[in-house]
Image (cartoon, rainbow, N blue to C red; front, side, top):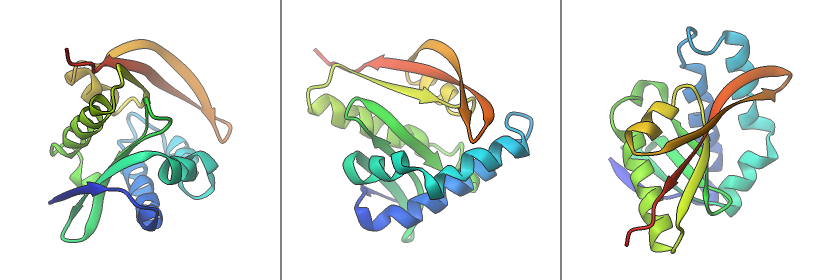
Amino acid sequence: MNLRQITIKDQLELKKVYFDSIQSLDEKIYSQEQKRAWSSQAWNNPNFDKSIKEGKGWLINKQGIIIAFATRYPNNRIALFYCKGKFQRKGFGSKLLHKLEDEANKEGLDSLYTEASLISYELFLKNEWKIIRKEKVIINNIFFERYKMTKNIKIN
């Protein structure tokens, strides 16, 4: 397993991880219709591309295959946070989250925020993030619930 910084050359493979991550979600939490609407964002969402090109991110690869990644964009927001389905719940998300927090702290940021899915918010909670509020958003005309979350990362 290898942790390294994301480059623009990784963009297509990151889209595949994003798509796989969403498509493999439990249908008790996200319906097929929601998964279709959400995963399609990989291919036609300028914010996804901007987060990869202009943000700061890290990925984990295993034998040269990207299995998970996360980005900050803008600088104080975790924008993308995804892991291929068969690698979920194996500690890769925690490793990426700690890396993003450590890097942000080194850059002098006081806190980070994110909008966490019904799947990822539990990982954030386990890592001392706080829920600001639950919110509803529309993606491709489909309603989703998510959590606006924050964490103070400043180390005195």
